[in-house]
Image 1 (cartoon, rainbow, N blue to C red):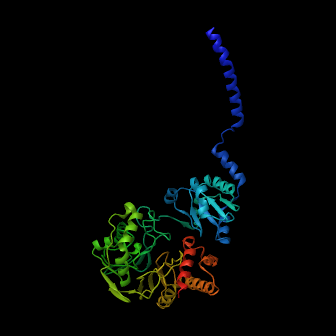
Image 2 (spheres, rainbow, N blue to C red):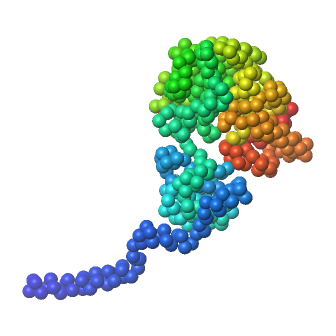
Image 3 (cartoon, helix red, strand yellow):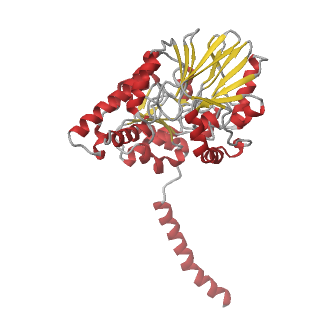
Length: 445
């Protein structure tokens, strides 16, 4: 009897379970493989080739490129595509971060990865989110890189603290070109140019570097080129990436020289700058501390080394307090410092006097330099830096002057057309900020 009761109870349960199994199998779709999802995405999206991407960038400089690989991949595998608006948003964060980078859904967007596996899925996602002009660069980063097209790398010297190793600009004049991005842990604070002049009577370094270890890395490169000691280190201004490596050079016995305004700036704000560098640098900040200049000057300081005449010049107010340029009259080379910009948009600070900067430019241009090593970016000529420094400042002041004359307010500065400069690095970070700071200064002129 006991066994028969058990059988009677189990039969309806078995039937229920069978029914549930049938319903479950009918409502849950079969699992799709990654390749099936990829194939489905490729049927929905627009793929473009390397040639088509080149054309798109040339035709629409406002096109946003999004590399969906991880930062580590970009760091170790050669960088990312160099374009006016090029960003890294890893595939796993795309849905959550893309709106910060591309707030307008009608902006042309091109996504890519290394071998065209993640980017089609990313393109399909952006279309699903409502972006109306999305393309997938199907050839992928490696095809772009191997074609010799422009690449932006987070580090060009993976086995060194330097972003890139020194290159010879002119006979005996070298510069380690920094990243044109803001200073970061990844670029070790090397986002400005660290230059040096080799003579038969020693070496003069321009900029101490952002931190102690970065300064040491630069010195290691100098020692590969010459046995001459570093006798002088010149600070182009009091910013962290110019001055915070001074402790290393002081230990090597070098004399540190700066403009008097740089000394004033470092006395007032140097400890705060050092702490900011240490927070960003973390383990890379070892040994970094504030060291003040040994010597200062006002307008001009001449150093004769070997058979070279080296002039340290304060030509007038420019980007920040104490800005100087290093002029080599025999070679017509100027290590301009932050008076001259071209690859990245120049930054305007609260203390920047843009009207005075334009007046100072006349003295800078009068040097007649044939080679210009700017504070940021590769060596170039006067025509290039004039276009993106003096002419940019004059244009912005003219536009804001008209705005003020017509009764416009601070909220109207976003209407100023700066598209001619949109291809410059840091444009997105600085264009609106520059306009607002220039407006606020001009209101009281």
